[in-house]
Image (cartoon, rainbow, N blue to C red; front, top):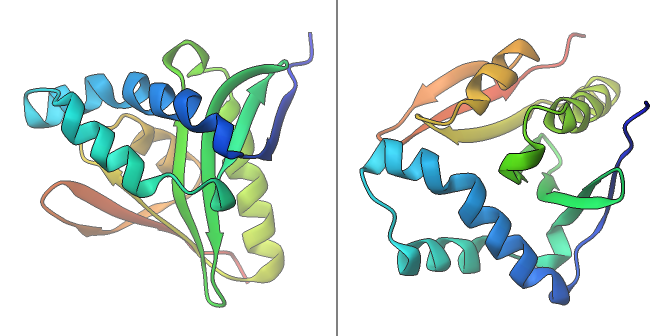
Length: 149
């Protein structure tokens, strides 16, 4: 069966779906890295980062599976967020979206930048796709994909 991965622009009504997705997707990573989950603090992180105008809702076979935000600058693309519900992780969604972004990066000859929590297993996916570590901070690793010229 061919899996269908699609995206659409986010709307204000997507707030609760995206908040729930954020909390479910980040819960285990946050507990592993910081030792506990503070719902109020996580609500704040989510509310500060959720901007429907820059986000897209991800679908897997017509079911809402997550959200993403890729921000375009003149000199790079910033993969700000790629958040997939746990039950949809490992199904190739992130690989497909990031591979499409890499094709665009190669065509435009501009790098893709992102940052990932140190305990987030998504680092493995990023490295398999060609992203390299460029800086390590206290809580995050900054990574970059540089297109081949």
